[in-house]
Image (cartoon, rainbow, N blue to C red; front, side, top):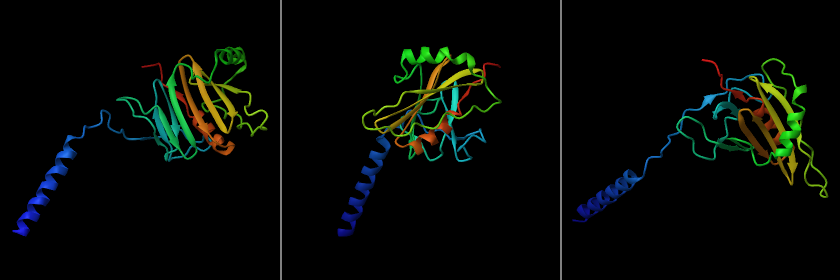
Length: 201
């Protein structure tokens, strides 16, 4: 009798667990297989880096980074993070880039030339500032990649180093944050992996 009661209780628990497991909804977007970064000889980028597919462009991130937001059916997640920092991509202009910064940067674009297929790395991140002046002035590094003008804007403010690669045509951006100059240097490697989708057939 005791054995039958124990078996019945075990069967009830098993059915309950199975019922709960089967009623959970399946996520709308299943994880996609990660693609290795196809770019080599760019600073810290190596075979363990993965490619992120954004809207009309791609870039690469360290292989240990994971998504912070869900992906869509055809694009990868818009936010990623790892021990070196975090990165987001989007359409339009990031909030940290003001219209005056855009106008000032576009005025100096005529002097930029591209060399080969690999863009020059952005300048080293700004060093920490005295407490009396917690934010550095934005530094802009423009360069051409796949016939698109990309500007990398770097700032350091209150212990956060922000590196933003952005373009006005197409209007897209990749913005990364770190919390030390050493980590910010690692983010520079992400920016030089940006590539735009071909407009040809």
